[in-house]
Structures are given as C-alpha cells and as structure tokens.
Length: 334
Image (cartoon, rainbow, N blue to C red; front, side):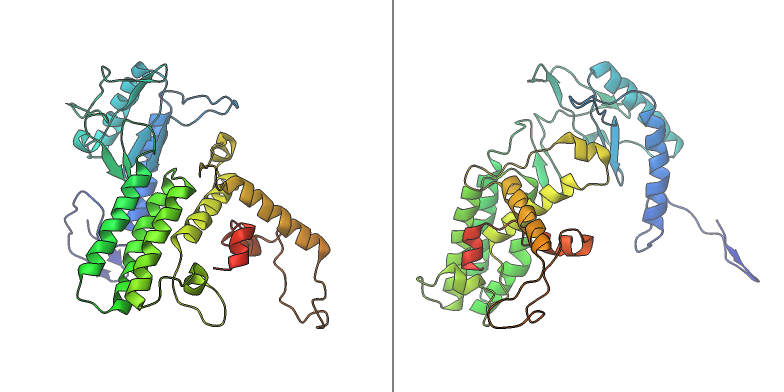
C-alpha cells in the first residue's frame, strides 16, 4: 500500500495481519470491519427468546472476542461454520485453544456435546476454565467461591507489600493504587456477599493502621472520614457499595433495549441490597428536588450548597457515586 498527498507519494508499505500498535485509527477500523462479519453471522440463526418476549442476538462481540448463546447444538454448529467462513474471507482464523464451550440440557451441564471451529475441537469449559476481562469462568455457573478467591488475593497482596523494605507510607501507597483496583474489579463483576466484603475491609484496615503507626482502636471514620483532616484512602466496603450501585444504574439506564429488558439482578447478600439502596437514594433525590433550596440554620437562602437534582443527567451521574450508601454509612461519613 502507498499513500499520495498533494505532490508527495510514499513508498510501498507491506501490510501485516493485525492491529497496528500505537495507531488510534487502526482499532476503530478493525471494530467497524469486524462488525460487518458479525452482521453476516447473525442472519444465520435466531437468538434465545427471553420470558419478556425479547430475543437476544445470537452473536455478541467485543473487539476480536465473540460470544454465542443459542438454544440448540445444531444452531451453534451452523453458526460456527458460518463465522469460520466469514473470518476466512478476512484472512483471519479462529483460535480454538483460546475458546471454550458449555452445553446445558434441562439445567444440567452436558459434557458430551462438543463443537468444532477452524478444523479443531473447542475445549470444554469444565476441563479448562478461562479468564477474560478480569473474571475467571468455570463450569460451576456460580460465584460462591469467588469471595474466598478475592479474599485470598487481598491477603497475599497485603503480605507481599508488608514483606517489602518500603517505609510505611509507601506501603499504603502501594496498597491504594496497585492492590485496591485489582481487588475492586472482581468484586464489581462477581456476586460476592457484602458480609465477605466487610471481612476483607477489616483485613485491609488493620494493615493500614500498622503501616501508618496508628493505634488499633482508631475507627474507620478516622481513616476514611471526609472532614477537614482526611487521608487519600478509600474503603473496600464503601467502594464495593458504590460499584454495585453504579452497576444497577448502568443496567437500568442502558442504551441497549435488550439490556434494560433483561431484568438482571445484582446479588449482594441479605445484609445490604444494592437495588433497595439505589431506590431509596433516588426517592430522596426526587423529594429534595420537589422541596427545593431551603434555609438551614441562621444563614439565609442561597448560603448553603446548591442541591443536586435528579432530573439533570450530569448531576445524576455525580450523585450516583454516593447514592448507594446506607443511612449507617452516612452517619459515619467515611
């Protein structure tokens, strides 16, 4: 390929298969071209029909990753054959070693059904679990073990940081900006009960007090309080509630009609329920908007902070970060 611009013509450039590293246009062009392949594959079979009457698309893609959900093995085989044909036209190929298959018959896992892509057999999810986008997928179809896995990840990370020769304040920095984001992502994507998160929060807080030389009797309000004197720290418990509340709003207000109609449930255990807390927060914001700006104390009107209104999208996004906290958390103000 060569390019001509006004009076200048470049030399011939050899094209390689893949996305050019560091190019901001190449990923966009790849996604646009790959979507054409998915459109051609969706016309082969119909997706699963939900109880609400909505029909899911048979193929969903994220960059070069494809997920197919169909009702019968025959439809899946026909769809994989069509995808393999379309991908071959684009001079690409499917990698069965990085793919997994899972078949269910009357709610029970069936390991006798296998599929073929690219001339090779796709491994079963039961025999080879796979990790994608920060989450490990297994054939258990449950997140019961995820809480213990994340807790072990947190404990191992705290132990490694504690064994380092860094001063205490740098150990806290390593926890806050390296370990904390790695722990919060699986907590958001998995159904981990809030009681397990509280135990993880206590484990992390004890290490923070040790590294900062603080007494064990210091409460969490002193560590994560947002008053005149505050530390740049975030609590795992509060971050967990904010992420779950944000996920509830993401599913409810999604631009995809299928996502809104799916009615996905965010399970957080019996101690704290994200959907109920979000409903209470929304009702409080709507009531505050109806009441309007009122006088507080001896100060006149307009002296207090301007309240956020739920009807405005920008203020609704800002309030959603703190709207998932319960009254007990607001009293502690961490």
